[in-house]
Image 1 (spheres, rainbow over the protein chains, first blue to last red):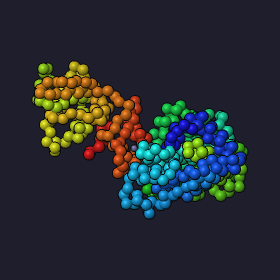
Image 2: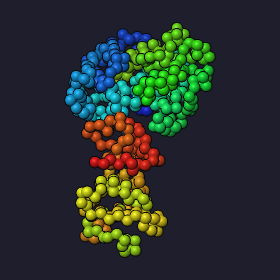
Image 3: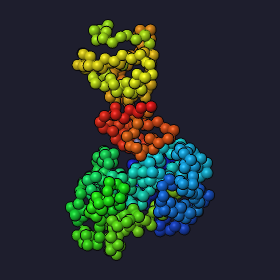
Image 4: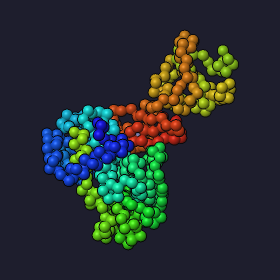
Length: 300
Length: 153
Ligand SMILES: [Zn+2]
């Protein structure tokens, strides 16, 4: 990959994607071979929002490459609490580390950070914006389970604020995929994502009910609908209940359907799905390590 | 000197923005940050007959030149505007605005959760689309009423 920073899935070409995924597969098959690939490199983990999973995954990846991670710690205990700008924070941290992994609650944060530092910035989630490393592991999982040809991908849940959805939708325009979006009216894809999908000539279909498309899907990517997106509890419960899947519902799906979720889940995928051969979300989470190893090896 | 130009008084040193899309003069003043409180001498003509546009607005500001950022945003709401720079009652420079690829400053992002709306040392920046503008940080698209997003500094 020639990119200095990884800010958005929009940067990624088909070739970039294949390069990272191929390398991730090699690493997964023989992790020992890269045990010293990033010997002496230090990765700064700057998480302005709580995240256990993504942070641990990066930490594991750099450690398995022979490098180290240094953690900014929670926002509560940092200079940010005292009103420091993000631009200042990253300029200080660039002096400590060889690359910065940034998670931030505001859209555009990673882009801004990248303008102030010379070390690579990796966007690990900016508000409702983008989450490109999640997308790479999602694509890895899709390629392993369903391939990249003549693919029908359903993406369900909070399409408006879900950054994993925005990144994945952009990236899927690089492969031979029909994209089916299933959500309540109020949580449809935002205008900016629609615009990009249209510009990329994507095949986009939208539904409010999963039953209308379930049987046609190779992959179903489920996301969580959050309580705070709704004005009141009743409305939330009613809507969330309609975008929930269980083993019974999946009886009408293709036998080969791959069910994914960026995790953590709450109750949008019932526990009985875990026992079916559709369940791929734990494998998906595990794929985060070799994929991030491949990425870090290329960027550091 | 044509009839229409006589309707608003001449200026000695400053800028005349002519051929503004009728109805946009108020927004042009907003782009310039002029609300009358800071004492500039300003003449505004609205819905003045024009050969080229049918009707047009015109704004004359004494003692003020426009920055490139202001001209760029101006071009979005008044694509046919001409800018005349006046010294000692003579027009010494005259040019038409052109639609830029990017506009910086002047507009503020309507997304309250955009990093540019916080206390960061950056100007807002928007990519110019065929039918609107798009924040280069959070990617929010503004289609209509660009003038509603002029920042009041
Ligand atoms: Zn913005």
